[in-house]
Image (cartoon, rainbow, N blue to C red; front, side, top):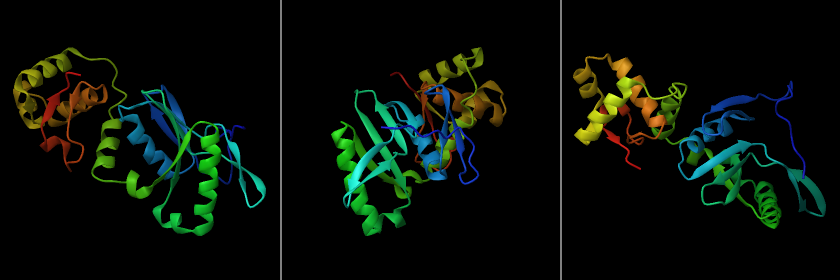
Length: 209
């Protein structure tokens, strides 16, 4: 097995940086699709840690021993691990790609890790992806402030409440309220329906997990 180093600058590659609070580091991504996948991993409660460009391995194809580096390695809270390869859906129909991917899956399985193909049709699902990006914008707000504790109590007693109602109750601007509530969602203290187009128009729910 071998390791690729994305931190070394390359004139031929664009590197995208994803700041992850979950793994407490910046994850280097080789493509925008890989970068967008990070938003899903960051807020997937079944994933404990994740990273890009893990140790590569070799696979056999048409009598040749070829190198391969998965796009990501995911560690789940149940103890399992999975490799991910990200690919535009349109490119997955190529017969050579399909044949090579089967060989890669077999080599990964021999190492004890499943290799999964994930396409843009699975990653770039909106409004979910856009909402995850919106939440991530507020992930740099650390700790829980006094006003956030009061907002949590309000939402806990209300059961469900909309952003505008929270703002009116505490005489806050919509922007301030959004910042407080989205930060609490990041911390797993509130829940909201990410499948809705506008989080602000949907109720926030206290998370008692």
